[in-house]
Length: 116
Image 1 (cartoon, helix red, strand yellow):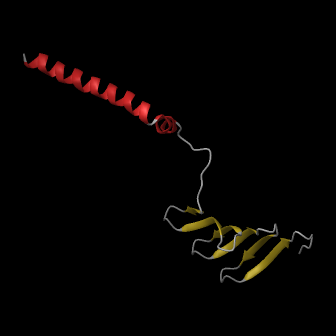
Image 2: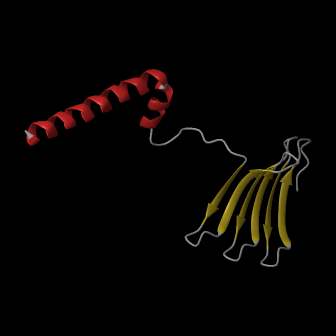
Image 3: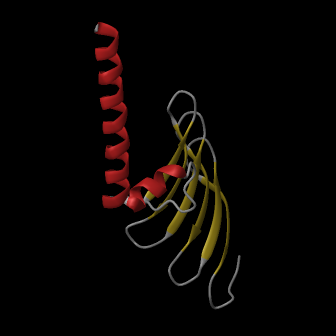
């Protein structure tokens, strides 16, 4: 008698899980399909940060408040050492900094063709 009751409970749980799964697929099929994909093809964010094993920020990709796309790379001490920037108007620059944050090299090009 006890064994039959356990089988009945198992059957009820299995049937409930099956019905719940079917119901979820009917009411939220897009969410169920999205759960199948392991890697999204597009990530949307205002900023991406790359950290090392100690959770220290080593790189950042962001849009600044002035609308400039900015890729910054930091040394192990958190100092900005390299930057690649592109402004809304298309001007671009590549900068390198020393350990004190002083700019040492700056290369760039403006939409007008001016470079340096």
